[in-house]
Image (cartoon, rainbow, N blue to C red; front, side, top):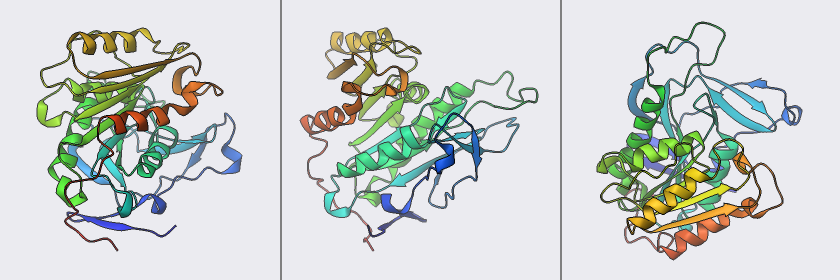
Amino acid sequence: MATITRRFGSFLVLAVSAVAIGTPAQAQNATMTPIPMPGQADAILLGTGTLPGAGAPESWYHQYGKSFARNVSVATLTPFLPDPSKATGTAVIVAPGGGFRTLMMSYEGVDVAKRLNQMGVDAFVLKYRTTYVGTEANPQTGQDVRAMAGADGQQAVRVVRQHAAEFGVLPNRIGMIGYSAGGAVLLSAVYGPAEGRPDFAMPIYAAGASSTPPPDGAPPLFIAVAADDQSVGYQGSVDLFLAWRKANVPVELHVFQTGRHGFGTKGGGADHYLDRVEEWLKVNGWLGPAKTGPSASHQ
């Protein structure tokens, strides 16, 4: 597949075929295998600052055939762009999970971005700030790192919306999908200030889902979770669905019989949740043709 480039302000960003996180054969088991931090020349700095008291450099590793990042002290967005002939004018920010201690950058990041690109969606993988992991005393004591991660999610929406024309997407078609802790980051954006709020959102086995009423101007939601989720459970997702229904805000809920947290148990409906996401995006018109074109040429 040919590499496609598109200019974004002062950044030259790469299409999905140009950015990948490999998985060496020796990293398919439970062993944590350190790997070099992938090149991120195309990453967009969010400008939320360096995490105060960050005690270790950012590091990456493979485990169970997946790539993770930890000790993230500076938040970024990495663009993954669809083939221009398929572009719909819709963008989605992807927030991986990992308990605020790690970020599952492949399974809940790059892999999701690639699937969104197949739908014609511009995807932006969010690397938000995380809590310290190490053997020394925690240098972040007294800091609310989760709130900082939530602020990173809000800023990600602002950045993509402010530069929407440069990507050829519509500023009112900026969505967000978030997994586990990334779902909590998503909810921070959903409940936050309007300028940092996505136009639609997809909390997937989201931490922090609850019956809190939606804010004025709340976006439509697609919610997915497994009935046997052993980590966050399913009740919060159900409560979130009911809160949106009570407020008469569009919402869809899938509680899959099996899948457990992370949808790692295969063989059930959760295996195909992104197909359900695609259907939902189509139903709501977000995969229809864009009504504006990119301001920069493709090469």
